[in-house]
Length: 175
Image 1 (spheres, one colour):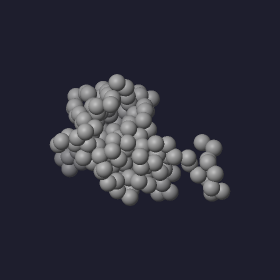
Image 2 (cartoon, helix red, strand yellow):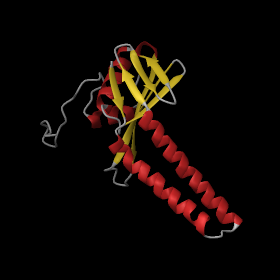
Image 3 (cartoon, one colour):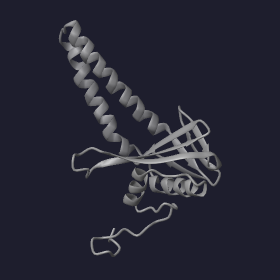
Image 4 (cartoon, helix red, strand yellow):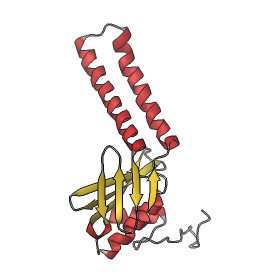
């Protein structure tokens, strides 16, 4: 059984964003008399930053375990999918820039009423995606064009194996 965790270094930015957001929204409420409208607006924004911080903490406490039988996430929220029950696989890319040069990926697996989402900040994300792709292929699951394109971007073929990355000259890339 292999275990995967979200490293603190990968979550540090999210913790910082949540903390700064809380400081910016709650700070004025604590030190400056505000109108009821401003209290509602700032309070609502503070609630969003608090929820974001809580979500980040949930990811930090989550341990993903994978073996030949399936994959499971253990933490405050638990999910488990046996590979033999895998019913759906999607790999999405979320860009943080207009030119799509920065962002993160998220793999979503479905099976027997369970859904498991894992984002690319987890250590071993590529191994998880390769295994899920292999099992999806064995079960004959169709993958969307977006998922296929994202697998290609990761250097993974539709069977869950590594594919050589190509340069514009047609040879393997030096990665």
